[in-house]
Length: 160
Image (cartoon, rainbow, N blue to C red; front, side):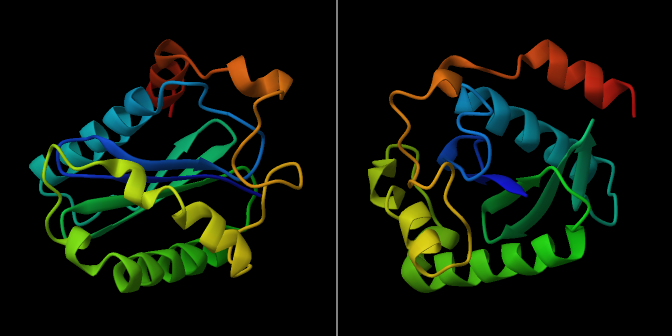
């Protein structure tokens, strides 16, 4: 099942972070997760790796693709990776259609609220499924305070 979509700019900032699986699986710290993905992606580029298209952390797989100055990351907790990569391509194409200018140039002080309706659009277009039958708002959800700590992320990354 697809759990999260994160769109990251060239500075490592999350322009968008949305949950589609277990509510709030990253907790409240989207910047920590986006910074981690951005750092690993940048490290791969520094080593001149052919590509970094996937990060495996335990049972969670992050599929990564870039477009312009943006990194798109989709996380899933199942084995359906080829289909999820196809979904990620669709998401990137739709994002580019809707926010064409921002795929090549995102200024540091941009109000990222302009991207807040994109997850709902993806659900409405039946590209992604909502969590718990709602969109991305789960104010009363008991999982809303649950988080994946940086130590847990680095431990899982180091054990691969």
